[in-house]
Picture 1 (cartoon, rainbow, N blue to C red):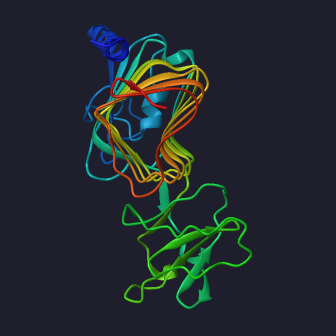
Picture 2 (cartoon, rainbow, N blue to C red):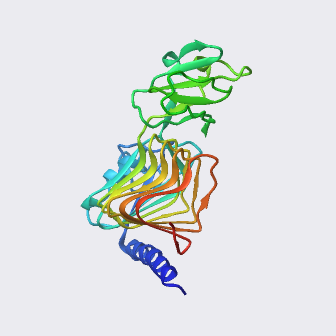
Picture 3 (tube, rainbow, N blue to C red):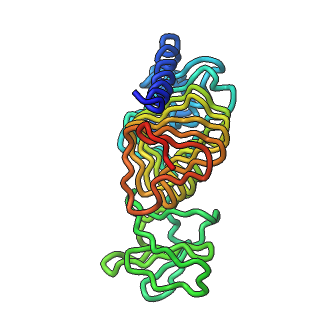
Length: 305
């Protein structure tokens, strides 16, 4: 067994094992975006009385985590996305947190308001989002093909039908002739929320069976000082910058997961961060696989250079 293999395996086993031990005395919180209510206490997976039942949002469940106590947050999956942005920040979560996603999706996309579109002629429509810099554009939950405008273009080139482009702070979409104009297509969505899950000063965190898609920047961002953090069987799909971004002095692992279609890179590792990637699939027609701008990345037991 190589030294790298031993280190990688030990890191993942220690984190998952530590959280498993914590579960012996952990609390459970339940989230249901169809039948839940944020006025409930989150301590049951169905409504029991006027106070007891699942909360509606994951953010509300995180607010209810007891300081210093291990908590498992269970998400109901009814096939409808949780439309929110999450944070695990600071010592409040020092007891250890596990999120069991059950295959649920957390989405940062919202419908484009019909009155936001301006017709430009020749089948091209334009709208200007409030937040600029990173973008994603989708229909029916799937990112549409992007036409990349060359840097410093003084004029917008012709956009192929069915594609979109970001130029000078606006999004331009060339509608297919067989589809309604953009202002009449309620299935068009754009990324509004910045990051799906932000971690800062976080320790003993495990995220399992959860998908983050269509955020302006990253699906998950371990910003700094994160340790003993593992993402297992997660999907980070079609985000505006990276699927997983790891920075500062953070040390995280990702195992048995899928990263796909993130615009700039599937994994972005910066500063002194360390990311360990095991049995994870990168299948992307856009964006680099791994962008290492500092720190250390291990892929299936080998150093990434």
